[in-house]
Length: 125
Image (tube, rainbow, N blue to C red; front, side, top):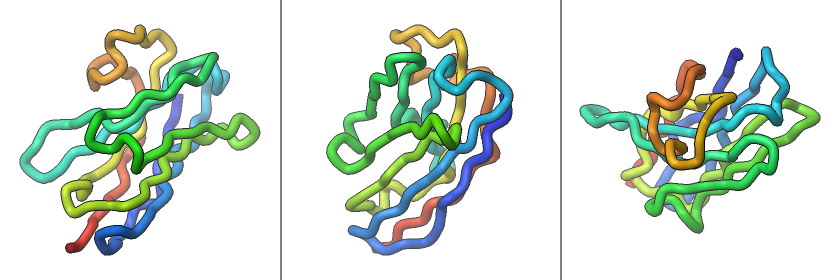
């Protein structure tokens, strides 16, 4: 599975960004796809995920109500719409995929087999 993330940038607090992750190499809906982020000096943090097949979505508490994860089957793309951005959202954002993910492990980075290259999101105050 290959993942290509894009869409990061430099924005001001309160602005929006839309990240995209193009997925190739496996049937799209057989994969669970997640977004993680890593701020300088910190570990990789789960942000949001969309579970394989049924497409149920999950979010970390700090982004609920602001971020939306979605998938476009025609484009083999998982998007992360980020609204009302805050300086604490600044990080490198990675998309990750797994074909064998179990629900209890959805927020654990080591549960994902394949990773994209990351895209930088910087939110200024």
